Image 1 (cartoon, rainbow, N blue to C red):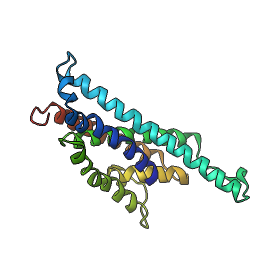
Image 2 (image 1 turned 120 degrees about the vertical axis):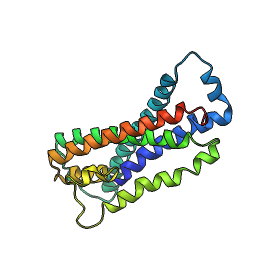
Image 3 (image 1 turned 90 degrees about the horizontal axis):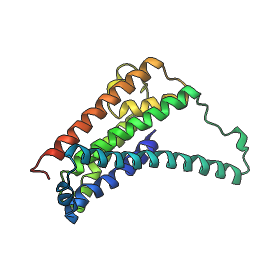
Image 4 (image 1 turned 180 degrees about the vertical axis):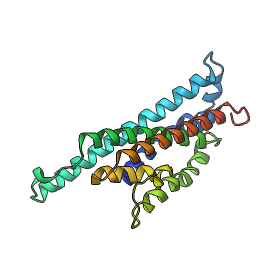
Length: 205
C-alpha cells in the first residue's frame, strides 16, 4: 500500500508543479487566462491531466513490480506458478476504486498546494511536507493492532493503506470498505474544492 501511494503521489506532484508554478515562472499561465476559457474549465483541464498521469503511474509501477518479482523468482530457480496474489475479483474491484480515488485526492492536494508557489524551485520545497502526509500514515499502518474498522476508515490516507492491506490479506469487510470509499470521496471533493478556491484567488494568480 505504501508503495502504491508513493507511485500515485510521485506521478501527480511533478506534473502538478509544471502546470501551475512552472507555468507561472514561464509566464504562460497569464496567457492562458486571456483566452475565452472559463476558470472552471482551466481547473478541470489541469486536474484531469494530473489525475491521468497519477493513475497511469500507479498502474504502470504496480505492473513493473509484479514483472520484476516474477523475473527474480525465475532467475533464482523458483516456481513462478506458485507466485500469485490471492485477491478475489471483488478485491480487485475495490483495489482499482481505491487507486482511482487516491489519485483524485492526491492530485487535488498537489494542485492546491503547489499553486501557492511562484516558481518551480519554490514548489519543489513543498514536496517534502506533502510526502510526509503520505508516508506517516503509511508507516503507522505497520504498527501492531492497526486494522481497518469503522473508526480507522474515517482517517484520511491511513484508511487507504489499511484498506489496501486488508484486500491483499483477504480480510476486508464490505462495510468498512464502503465507509472508506465514502470518506475518501468526501476528502477528495474537499481537496478539489480547495484547489478551485486557490485557483480563483486573484492574489495567488
